[in-house]
Length: 220
Ligand code: DX5
Ligand code: ZN
Image (cartoon, rainbow, N blue to C red; front, side, top):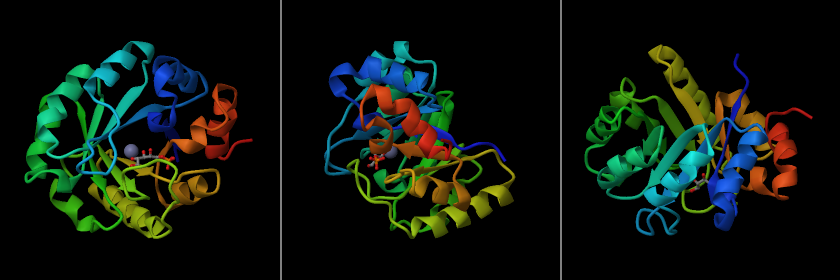
């Protein structure tokens, strides 16, 4: 089994120093950069747009994992692709044609992800499992960092792991929300191979990032 990969969410970074923050987590051992895009409509918070992605792109070679919490999502898929996203993930509720959104992402040469909210049934993935490179399982309701991990997520992760393995496809299983040193090993044991963490990575400032990431991997 591959070691778990860590995707720091820049939602918890210092927005006034974003280029440095992205460099610092890369130096501290991050695998992906998780970028939370919120529109104040699909979720009750507003974060950043394609210009921020373009601004930090020169600061990192890591995979940019862009999580779109916006509706409709389709309008912004191309701008985020052009700005430097490598993976673009959409929520099925964010537009009428999920398959079209995924095809649009693939058509731009990017990896496509589907995000599943805590109350979204897993069956939504069945018709599109052949079209996705990543499944993002939300372990909090989207909108804010710093929320508590919803324990029922562990059963969803196990079932998603089963379905991914049965598909025989190479699909990342990402978990997002409330990941810390306690919940990270639980999520990994349940089958997640990519852990998003905002608060747990950025707490304590740059001197702490390396230890924070090691803690999430279960290293000391
Ligand atoms: C929530 C976002 C998450 C969030 C994670 O809507 O999708 O990526 O920033 O933050 P923490 O790790 O603080 O729960
Ligand atoms: Zn996210």
